Image (cartoon, rainbow, N blue to C red; front, side, top):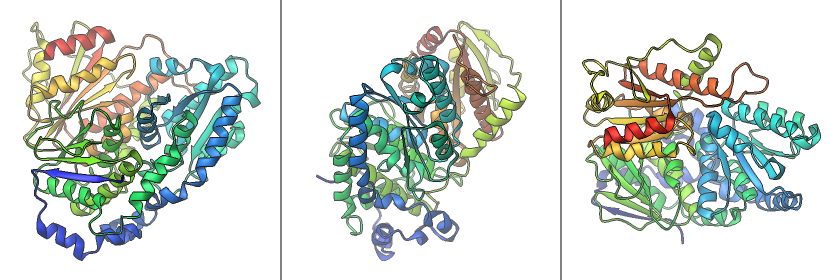
Length: 532
């Protein structure tokens, strides 16, 4: 079975369909025509279309990875930890969750989550995955694991043998991997961008080492790849639907997994769609739902997409069914088509570096002095962009009033983004805030764990329509973890990343409510109660 796209309640204009046919978009994309997105995008597109070849070009990895996995298992190394961000971590997480195999994904700077990952070292192999080779989160995690292995009594050679590296040729990480004596180094295709890399070494290496059948994944993708030049292929239809919906005012894509098919796909599709389309003041905002019936599924400016299901009674909606390998390739192709319809370059990310640069500056100069406007229970309240103007924070329900003010600042057609710089395992209940907030408004409500959302929806927040309001949640650190060889700790890095993102949003004048939890569990509970 390959990809199937079922649309309900949405009309794709005939002239749009006819225009794509007249322009021969399907065949031109399949043969990697870099002119499809206009002259301004041509240079970037020319070096970013290698993902179309991956169902074939990645085939050589299958036997290599099977052999390496057997070697690791023979040495008692059966626990795989992946250190990566964005496209380097989200696809392996979906692959392994869907396959039902264990993979520890470390895509955070939260000290508690970092410390929790550095256990069972006697049976652990760490996959360090970074396209650029300079990702600060990933480099910090690599340093921490090297130190932990050494502290456990491994000599330098043994420490190096516990690392597998995935990066682009010539990156700083490629050089570091050789210097540290990594057991294996996989150099990925540099013509594949991070968010389009699910079927490359970035997606396959950690997944295969964890026990997923990546050969079957490629088989399913290859079946769809054979259809992509045809003008009636399902991936083209999906791209048409996404683009047509956005053009008709449904520029929010409500993403939900079906109950029995693919697990966690929305998180991967979120970064693909948001980072590819959210720029030049326009874009499609993915909203990852807890289920197809969760709050936000029937929002007036949303198209509901159910992944793994042939459809839903909710209208307008699109059901996208088919195996995971075909889903990866199909959504990548569809996003490229939607980018053409929207008139943007789907392969660049012009605003992603802004928060990174802010973080670097803060690590050097120190955190800004931001005094709370009030402390209510376990929550320190701060705000910018006028969000707290006129709010009586001395009232017994001051937190609820602040949240109401933030919701009231979201314009028609806008959205509220909840950004939690917390531990997504120990503080998992923070994710319940999305549905709780969404139940109180018709506006789109998204949820992201910091800092990983900076590598996905962070681009949309800065480069997409400036209609967002933002709720940033940070928390007290019970026990910090140092970053070996650096002057900052994980807690310091996390705080700098949150402050850097606040600055990027404040510079745009966006409404921002910053809630700092002086007790994480109590603070999350207090927030959920305030929204109840």
